[in-house]
Length: 107
Image (cartoon, rainbow, N blue to C red; front, top):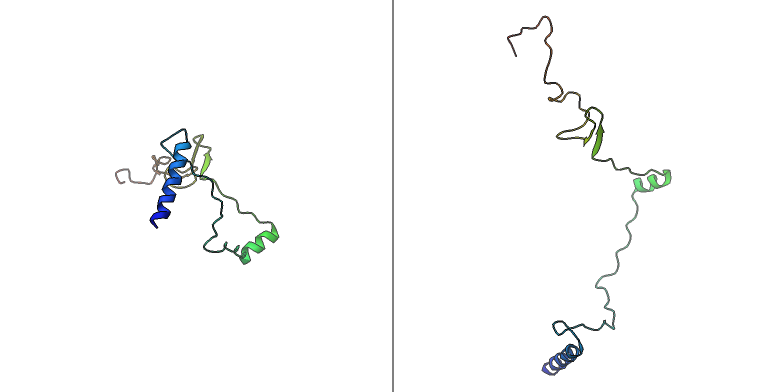
């Protein structure tokens, strides 16, 4: 083991002495290809829905998260905080007119 380690060290130092940059050793390309530990995985079979969709030409479309809000003229999230085109938002309905029969003192 010591002899093999010495041979390896001598080979590395000879590579280092032939390099213009002495701070890094450029190793030669490997000559033997290492085998894989396990074989390549087999492609998984299509599900019934995937087969049906391929036969009918159905393609899944991804909906964007942002939509154009006509009222504000800006891009807004489709759902969540600041969502677009929401008619009953609190910011849109901050004033509710009282009907003639309502009591004005109550909330």
